[in-house]
Image (cartoon, rainbow, N blue to C red; front, side, top):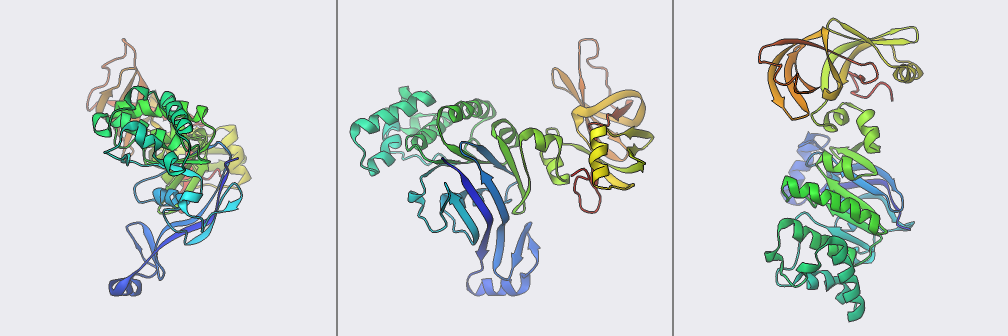
Length: 391
């Protein structure tokens, strides 16, 4: 078993020295650089609670500075936990040294020894454990086979490409057969083509090794394609936890709605109207009834008529003869679809329109078009709390 539990985890970086005392006095209770500053110091992670099942692939995702790497480093033991409890397989790990936690970590910058060959890099931790030469050779070659780097075992890192170096770094972690596999933005230094290739390799890898993964990234594509569940973070707080489909279809708040999905969700100032058990969204001259499922959730929360922020994803906009009027600013041909950047209702809006040979090049700059949207694909958020009114 390789379960991980984080209970009320908090990370505070305390002030230090005379400068710290001055900051402590002047900045207590304020917010700077999106992180809370208290009389104890800068709070990087707040009230982090997460139960990770055996062999689950969890992805921590969010913008730079949101606390995801700090959280990963606390699991690894590279950062002290200010408050809360960390359990691995039911054992409290707060005071356990990193080497005794039975975890392996893959870093963004590979962290390979340049004077060692690939084989020696992968075997290093096993030699420290004083395992036999036969066992080391067996494990190294097995890991190299999984990662398709057997032909590079005699090379040194400088003779490898970025993708090959990252495979070696992963292989070095695999040979240890850890309970928990931690990966801190391992693909961020690779070009787009290699990132796509390595994502596929990591998916294959998790099917072949019996361990739990915690993966950190700022790239939502990696999060959506790799994770069993995604933990979306902002300013040290968890915003939402769910499967890729859950966070895409049912974003908990405006931040999640704007962060997950590419291109980003369109946001409009709109009106939610309740008429008995029915709910309608009114935008410009368009009035759309929400789906039965959405109406049931809004009714269960006793949501009343109010001004809202309406969210509609670009792929869920629908061209129509009548509807919200929009002016085409830019048309981007993407092959199977066209991305239209339009001005509508005082907002910059992106629409994704399928293309065929007959419909290609039909949009011109300055052209007036109209669009609407389906009631099953409309998301309504509170203007005050920014939370999804359905949940």
